[in-house]
Length: 85
Image 1: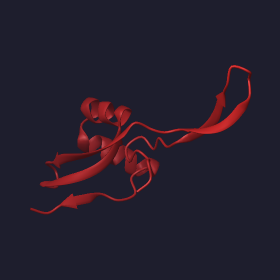
Image 2 (image 1 turned 180 degrees about the vertical axis):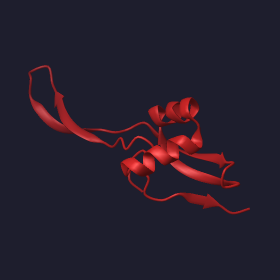
Image 3 (image 1 turned 120 degrees about the horizontal axis):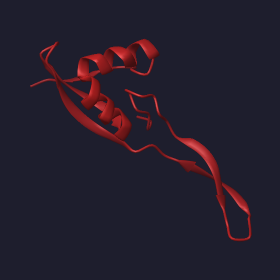
Image 4 (image 1 turned 90 degrees about the horizontal axis):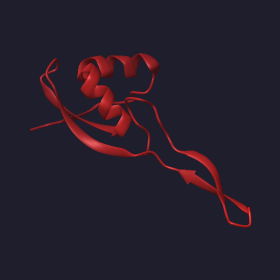
C-alpha cells in the first residue's frame, strides 16, 4: 500500500536535494505514516488505518468517528480494514 494518510490525505511530494555547489537532484519527501489499530465503538469492531502523525492528532482531538466521517466526505478514506478476532 502506498504511503498516504487515510485521515488527512497527506502523501509524498517531490523536491530537490541541493548540494553545496547548488547542484539540484530530485528527491522525495515521504510522509510520517503508521499502521495503527483503533477500536471503533460505533461499529463495535477493531479497524486498521494508515495514519500520519497529523492524522493521529486529529483523531485525538475530534474522536475516531468524526475523523472517519470527515475523511470519507473529503475522499481520503478509501477502505477500512476490519480486524477479525
